[in-house]
Length: 203
Image 1 (cartoon, one colour):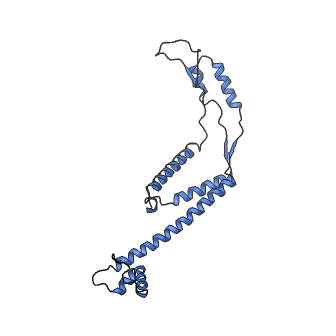
Image 2 (image 1 turned 180 degrees about the vertical axis):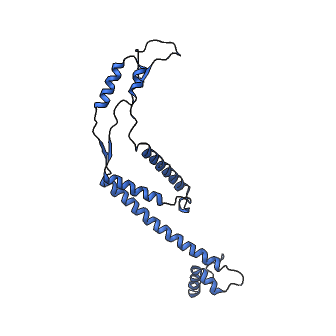
Image 3 (image 1 turned 135 degrees about the vertical axis):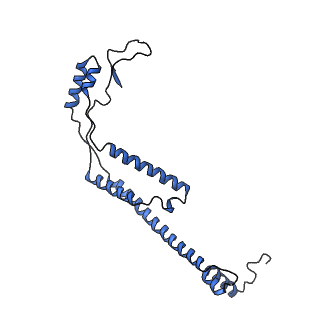
């Protein structure tokens, strides 16, 4: 938006008129953040900084990988905006505006309004209800992470066992039973129940 001086009249297509942009003439509204919100933000930032985003758990599923990538892009954008708006806005150059328009009195009025206006601060607080919801989500995610880590540990142990006891034609039945206990138990049950032809094609 801008104010044209003199008022717009039919002009050739390529001609220009002095223009005073007024979008930024309103004084900035003070924004304050409660101590609770700032502490919660710092805790969230610490959690994010400690996450290993290159871990295998984030790459196993394409849908999860896409969600993680989108979340990381969102956090990066939030960090950039927080850095951008951490400092107060630069003062408006009313002198340049006065030299660009004919009606200097209007600019003087806008400058006076800008300097005399004191809008009330806007306080953003993270409600207790939302905090409880996020805490519940974090608790569930931590439980899922612990379960996945337990599965990873068990799988790694099983892989190590299979690599150490690689079967061959010379492997003994006791070694096979140690490496594959489920199969050994099934065989014992079949012998005990005299199911000699259980796994044959023609019963």
